Image (cartoon, rainbow, N blue to C red; front, side, top):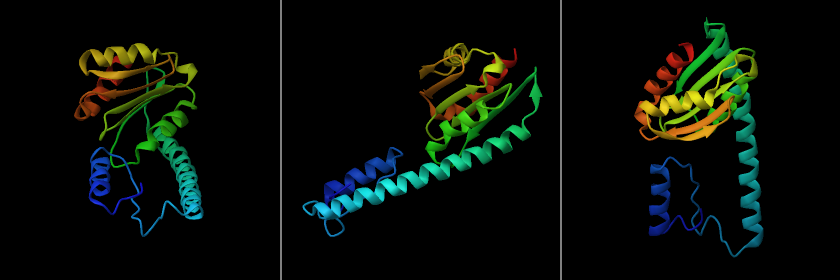
Length: 175
């Protein structure tokens, strides 16, 4: 964001960080918005960094999915990966769930502890209804979200309930 050297800019940066956003603040000395070439250069650098981050997160998701799938114990004919992610980049959640769902008879029940985000994903061969499972979890742990039989996204009203919600989802899935 521009104008980060001023009082309002600093307040906006702090508020964004408290809300869990990663903001880059630039003071006037770092970026003069009247200089078109400088603005274009800043956007090009941001885009390149974003693309590099996405690539790194995808590689990390692939590697972590392999480790989690290898460590998962088969239960009821399914490989269930239930994991509460701590201290990870929030953008890792979706690619990790997607990578796990590529594996036959695998169900991923993932949560991001800091935000209460949930992602449940499965390979079609798992044959469960994750949308119905999410509704059952919401009966105990309120939140908002939805999706399909094979892939749901949600956010719990109370992020501190992430581990308990994933545990309940696992229990319901096996019952």
